[in-house]
Image 1 (spheres, rainbow, N blue to C red):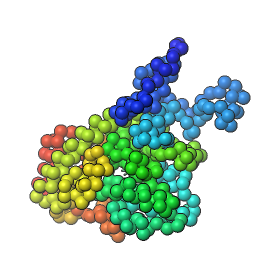
Image 2: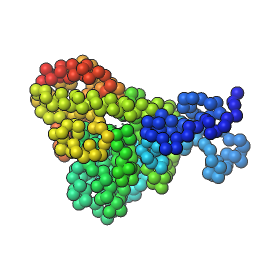
Image 3: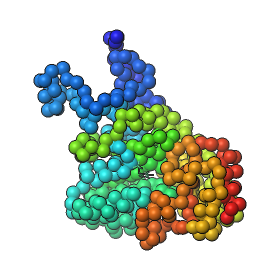
Image 4: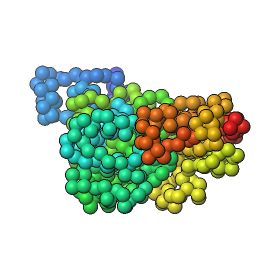
Length: 403
Ligand SMILES: *Cc1c(COP(=O)(O)O)cnc(C)c1O
C-alpha cells in the first residue's frame, strides 16, 4: 500500500543548510512508503520492468540500479551525506578505510607513477605501499609530514599524488594543508588527505585546497565501534576513476554498514566536541603526572604546531598519545594496570581505548621505519571516548601508579 506523494514534501529542502542540518538530513531520498528514518536496502540486485529495460539500464541509457556492487540506495545516501559535509561534488564509499586508499591509488596511478606519502602515516598504509603497490611499479617516498621543504624537494616530474594524514596517528603531527596543496599543484600532482582523526566536523581539507579526502568511516563516523567502512570525496572528474575501480574490483560498502554510518553522522559534531573537550582535559592532566615524560596533543600550547592546529581545525581531536618512564615494560605495565579503558587498537568509539603502537598498529614496521615515524617503545595511544572524565582519570591513575 503506497501513497502518491508530492516529491517536494518527501525530501527535505536543504538549500543553504548548515553542517548540523546536513549531517542529519542530507542524502535521504524517501521512498513512496514515506518512511521518516533512512531506509535500509538489503538487496544485491534490482528488478527490471522488461528484458529491454534490463538491457537499457546495463547500457547506461536509462538511469537506475542494476546491482549493489555498482549502486545501492542506502550506500548512495551515505555518499551524498559525506559529500555534503566535506563540501565535495561527489563521494564514494568503500568496504574499509584501507580499501579507500587502495581504490584511490588504483584509480589515479599507473605503473611508473611516483607517490609521496607522509612518513608518519597509519601502519597498514605503509605496508600497502611497500608490500603490494611497489610490486606494480608505483614508486613511493615518505617525506616527514610537517616539513614543507622536504615535500617540495621530494616532488619529481612523475609525482602524481601526495597523501597525508593530518593530524597524524598516533603523534598528532600536522601539515599546513593549504601550503602543501600549493606545492602539489605547482608540480602537477594531487593532494589527498586522510581526514579520519578530525572528520569534517573539525576540518574540511577540500576547502583548504586539497583535491581529495579519504576516511576510515570505521572510526568517528561510525562512532560506536560497530563496523568497518571507508569513503573518498572530491570533484566528480576525479571520483569517476575510483568509482570505476570499485565497481569492477568490488571492495564496495555493505548497505547495512552504510546505514549505521548514516546514523553515526547525525551526531558527529556533538560527539566530536565532547570527545575533544575530554581529550583536552586529559592531555593537560597527563602532562602534569609523574612518570609521564611527554604528551602529544595539539591542544597543548607546548605542541610545536598548536597555532597551525588552531587555524586549520575547529578543535584538537580525541587522540592523546604519551610517553611513560620505563620503556616498553613501563608502557605495558601502565596499560595492564587500567581496569576500564579497553585495550584495543580501534579508536573513535564511545568507549575509550588504549594501545601500544610499537607492538600493534606499527608492529609490522621495521625498527628503522618505526624510529623514522617517531613511534617509541614507551609510547601509549589513548583514544578518548565519551565516559565521564573523572572515571577516565581514575583509571589512568592506576596506570601511573604502576609505573
Ligand atoms: C583505521 C585507519 C585507517 C584504515 O581504516 P580501516 O577502516 O581500518 O581499513 C586509515 N587511516 C587512519 C588514520 C586510520 O586510523
